[in-house]
Figure (spheres, chains in turn cyan, red):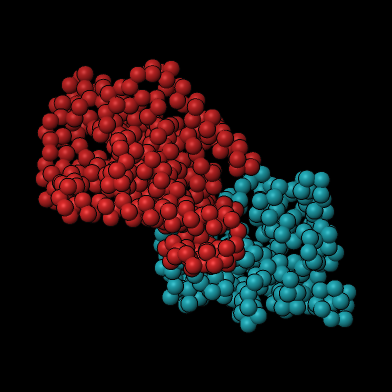
Length: 243
Length: 376
């Protein structure tokens, strides 16, 4: 689907992480190339969220290297990584509920100083999510779940990411909205943003992804194209809810 | 007992609606609280009725005296409000009450005294009061801000990850430290701000009321500071970041916000407000000492709780309400009840207001709004 750039945008080189004495990620190697849509599957406590947090610098790996666009960023704070083109739509969206929708979007561009570019991106997001534009002055906490998801995505896009991490994007959404949500993800992907998605809804996620990884108790056990994973009998039995 | 409680008329409707279960569960604490609420309403109602009767028969206060009390209350309340903002802002971002904040106010007042006394001796205070006042304000704000920044860096930041009780206790320690540091520096006696120049302090007509110029000045400076703070929090990028940090530190960091820097800015801004309040206190009451911060600090904390701690508008309003209540309360409610020596009972009234707010609306007068949205 996408032509792969030979140089990965985001990379894990032999990452190990611990929470205290608990070994979470075990020798994990990952690579995300520009413009890809990759999904990470796995059961509870398999290390999915830790993977995202490690990428963003909220968790420091015990060994191994996190590489962002060719640069080892292990000791760099989250803000540094966000400035270099990585951001996340967090689980349950986590908007600033007391702030207005507009303020939420503006905070996404907190590290940017190009006023014109910010205004341009705001317009682009209003174009993508016309419903958001109608609610700009409303407090974000008063929006419906679907609208909040749009604002959360818009907020993430405001930092002009090259790679967007998504933590359980369909969690807590009404079933009818889940499909719309995946369409939005595809739309963002078409704009050239690489997407790394952690998702419980494996079927749906794999149907729009280029590649996928399966994590089990902190180890990558499967690493294949999305189509191959959809056909994989073991995976179907374990995650896709059918034999 | 069910019959007794349910038959009783209840407090204001919001409480009744929110907590229906109180009148269904028959536990003794609820019954006790209901009785206390009724007694409180009764006393206030009786006092106020007697006051109205006295006024009607012409025995009570002159309307001018009443207006003066209200204005004095607003001036005092504006200072409480300024200090309360510091409690509220820090509570907003860190969820802990900085009990040393009253001492930040005191440090501003003391710095203001040192500078104004020097200026007075140089003659600038009399010859160019406006410039002197700006110098005094600048130095006091600088000292108070520096005090909060040091406090945060030295005492609170290392405890950021510890249970909330620990920084709370530390703040009490910081409070004692600052009191004693100032005691060692300037001694135990009360120091007087120089008197304001005659042209300013004389009474003048304002909106049809005769007012002391000093009170007008205090109100003016307080409201300009509050407006400035409101603009900073609501309209600037840093203010927006501050509100974001108050709500969700992790996501704020994800936006690229330097959370530590925002926290220290919050302390600093709160400190600046306390510094302004310190100078105003000195201008209005003149006497300042190492203990100046204690009672106003507690009152301002009370004001913050009355308004709903964490809510900036509520803190300002809470300050004004508390100031007016303690100013008119003794004569409005206590005097008609025949209680002797009411002018000594300001503090009783102030803390009674706190008790009343906690009885009827524990989240503070303006606190509910925020928590309701949190649930949304």
